Structures are given as structure tokens and as C-alpha cells.
Image (tube, rainbow, N blue to C red; front, side):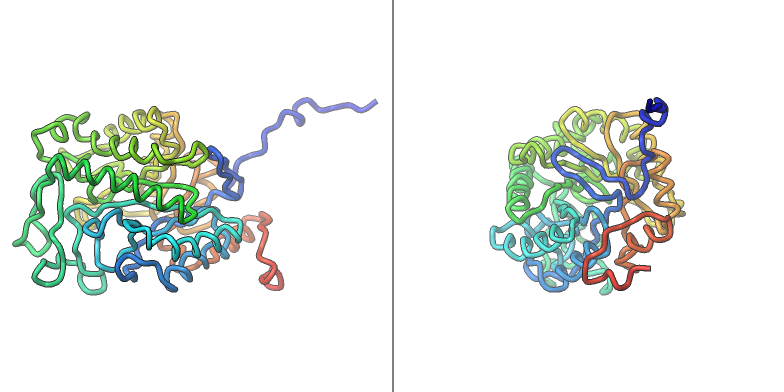
Length: 367
């Protein structure tokens, strides 16, 4: 007679950094995400060999989900002239080359759709990052309310209702192109002081119409964008939203606002909240330290029936694994650490004692 241990039979395997995660019709092989990071290396929005090497190498390195940098939904929505764009059908083919390779490595390609708002028309960071005027070859930024730009003398243009409606359409069209380019997860960028975040925050949104004032009015444009994007998304395609969970400033957007928003996002079909912060204050005003944004992801996950992603100074295997194994977040988004080390996932698996499937070409390097 075979004796079955009922406890062992019903035991659930503990979740860890290398546990798969299924979201709608997409299965991620692990919980490591390459966070969207601008490369400022495109011309007219087109992906090139740099973007192929940059994104593909992280897929070879073992990350489960590879996000493109913030991809502008219109030319004037770029942070800089070097940003990737997806406002034209011509942008699709070079992006499809990248997504095809990422998927061949067993990773998933995700795209972050964005509009820079009043932070548009900026120089690339290594050239100072300041506003470039139209006379200098830039363009006029737009925003919810007229805002003084970083040259301290120019102002953005306040959007009209008609222009807002066009931006909503631009996000929808960009999402459709992203699907045609092979991306399997769509993220809407509503953080870091860019356009959708500018609508959310009372620090930047001074409108007195239906898009400003109350919380319900300030979230209206984001909800319009999400509704529009969902019109073109297949049922199996996950939808993420990146938010700034707090402005880090008095009278600004707060974690309480983020929890309230997350409850609404869950109801309208958003699958994961990517929990970042800031955008309207200098980094020196933010208490930056390892896991400094993790409490936001944890609180939203605890108080709202929605998945969350943790981001911000996650730099070690033990740290990343603890975030997942303790249930504080569902995914860890790595930025600078993956810039330093494309093979962080492989090294993390080795350090933590997990098995990771390597490309055949790299099996000789396995310890």
C-alpha cells in the first residue's frame, strides 16, 4: 500500500525570482524585467543597430521581459530628437527585427508608449538635457498647463481639448503599430513628469476644465488613453501602466492617490502597475536608497487586487529574490544594473542556486 502525505501533495511551490509568471495570454519565464531606459540614439524615431544590440543582449542575458525605451507616440512627444518613435508605419519593420530576436531567446518584448509633455525638445543628457528652442532646431512642447521650461525663459503650450483628443488617438495608433511590430506587452507611461503624469499631478495640472482640478478630472486623460489603447489590444495582451507613486513634494500626488488610482486601473483592465516615483522634484529631494520605491509596490499590491512591479536601486540577486519571495511585488524592474551587466539574470541564477536555460552557444561557459 502506498501512503500519500497529504501535506506534501497539497504544498504550493514557493515563488522566487525564477518562477514563471502568467499574465493573460503571456508567460514570463522569470520575474526579471529590463526597465525602459532611453538611449537617445535614434534618428527620426527609427530603431537602429544600437537598439538591436542593446535590447537583444539583455534577452540573451536571461531577463524574462525586455522593455523598449519610452517610445514616442508623436514627433513632438519625444523627450529628445534621439528618442525612438512609433508614430509612423515605417517605424515597424526595424522594431520587428528586434522583437523577433528577443522572442527567439525565450524572453518577451514589451513596449512603453509615451509622450514627454513639457519635457519634450530637450538635449540628450550628455549634452546638458536642457530645452532646445524652435530657433535652435527643437519644437514647442505641450502640456496640461502653460509651464516654464528648463531654459528658464520659454513656456510650453497649454493643450486644447481637440489636441488632447488627438493625443489619445495617437496612443491608440501607436499601440496598434506596436502589436504589428511584435511587442507582446504594452505599457503606458504615466510617470516621471511626462505628459500623462503632468495631468495626474496637482503640481503641474492647473486646468479649470474637465481635465483639471479634482482627482477624477486629473485622471481623465489617462483613462481615455487606456480605453483607446484597449480597443486595439487582443484579449491575451497584458496592459501595464507606469506611475509615479508619489511626487515627493507637499501638495503633490501621494501614495494614497496612487492606491485610489490603482483600484480604478484594475477595474478598467490594467494588469500591472509599474511603481516608480518622482518627476517634478530634483533627485536630491528624493531619499534614494536601495528599495526606496519598493514600499509603493508593496502597498498597492496589498491594498488593491492588481499585480505590481518594483523598481529603483535593485542591484543584487538576494535583494531581487527577497522582493519576489516575500510577495512584495510580482516583478522586479532593473535599470542601471542591467546597463552595467546584461548577464545579471544568469549570474543571479548561479548565485541563488537556480537552474537557468542558457543559449546553446553559451553552454561552454556554464559553471
